[in-house]
Amino acid sequence: MLNIFQQLQAHAQQCPYSVALWHNSGQDQSTSTTFSELAMMARHFAAAFQKKAPDAVILPMYLSKSAECVAAMIGAIGAGKTFACLNKKLRPPQINAILHDSSATLGLIDTYGTMTLRSEFKIDSKIAQTNWWLLHDQNTPAPHKKAISDMRNASRVEDWPFNNEIEDSVAIPKLNNDPQRTGCCLFTSGSTGTPKGVLITEFDLRKRASAEINWFGLSKDDVLLSLLPFSFDVGLNQLLSALTVGCTLVLSDSWLPADILKAVTEFKVTGISGVPAIWVDMLNASMYFDTTNEHASLRYITISGGDLNQHYLEQLPKLAPNVDIFKTYGQTEAFRATSLHPKDFHTKPTSVGQPFEGVNVYIVREDGTKCNANEVGEVVHTGLGVMLGYLSDDHSQNKLRPNPFIGEHDNSHLAIFTGDMGYFDEDGYLFLQGRSDTMLKVAGNRIYLKEIINQILTIESVQETEVIGIKTNTGDTDLFAFVVLAADANVTSIQIRRQLASLLPSYMVPRQVIIMAFIPRTASGKPDYPVLIEHAKNILKS
Image 1 (cartoon, one colour):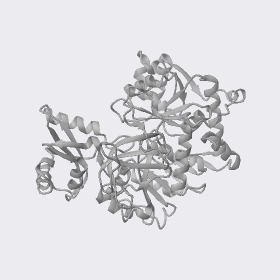
Image 2: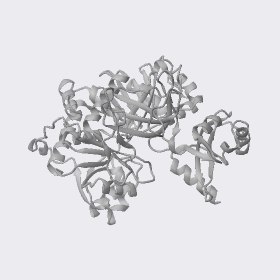
Image 3: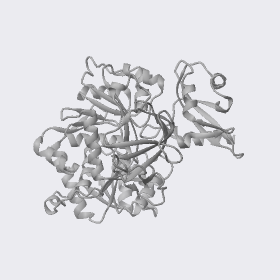
Image 4: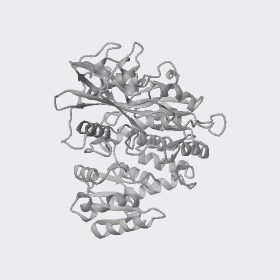
């Protein structure tokens, strides 16, 4: 089985002039990169890593989505290195922590990245002590030039690309099929907190890509729209699936509904992996795919990285008529646990489906025994997608444990205890109930926040909501609901609380309902809970 670097080289031989990547800048400017060009760039990176960074193990890449970024990641695999594509929303404290935990001696950065890190180049930080390869943009704005100049004066910087002769003078290593060789390190958390490095083997990256190709029915004729960052496992796997099967990937950073519709039209997109926030924005804007005319190429979309509420699930088929809808569920530490096939979307829309190819999923009681059908317990994942481990020993290892169910039907040695709570119905479909850490004791009663969320969403004019619990100084838990209303809504926080009082027991009615213009989200589209928690704590203080 070829690794992804080797597979790219094979595509370059078989279809050198086929387009591997389109880079859609969103400004009516798109550039293409053929498989031949991308393979050559990846070889160049692999050779450079081999010659100039032979001792580097993990290569942090603080890069925007681009052909160069893709080539650098695949080149790292070719050189037997571990790439770590970093979220561009991370800030200097998080980057310093990552560089420290990974013991990185070399990092890759582009001109936009220098703007974020420029203040750190002049102080005694891990950022200033790291060697950097600088990838230039074609048109560098003046402020970026100043940041680059500051970086050069304070840090060890080399411009990429180097002299092309390096490729001819360095032999790219012939890697064996070591199933334990690390290929990627994904860092969890958003703009706050200390990122946790999740180590994934190169072998598992291949298997993930192959499984996704089979599940989505991908072929060389597909054109996939890349909206999600490569630092997010769903966005990364979409990239690796495209490179493995040999289809075209359109790189775009814009989640604006108009830009998405335009990209599907221009590039004849066939598939989109999306998070709930993308589809919510399109539905709220009343912007739909015209699948009978200009968007007729589109054949599937996914709901990944979270779920939609019942209201939006009912509307979603109208967004893209006659287009397959795949729901997927997983975690950074365990990738894709289950998926709901399009044929089941109308009959079990609130389910996240059945175990993915190569995966075993168990629902487990607190005593470690398996739950019966319709009995809620913790979701445990074994098989495809299980991480190798965390990068730093400082992070809790409680999530990754020996597989308690290893045997004739499950030969996996490790299991991920996800912390998600759910149940299988009689037909073997998984339904999530929330996280174990969102199961709270309020006034002595055990509740799941999702129960409250579901009732809030039944109130007319409520479009989105998130509920959190805050421990008070007395040891009690106060509930806070953050609500986004429809544009024409005429309802107050007090009125929402009164309606909830008729729908829920008194101990489940939030202490406060806060109306917001939008729910703050991380780069991967998930609710930014640290921001919501901080907001609630400030309310408690006032």
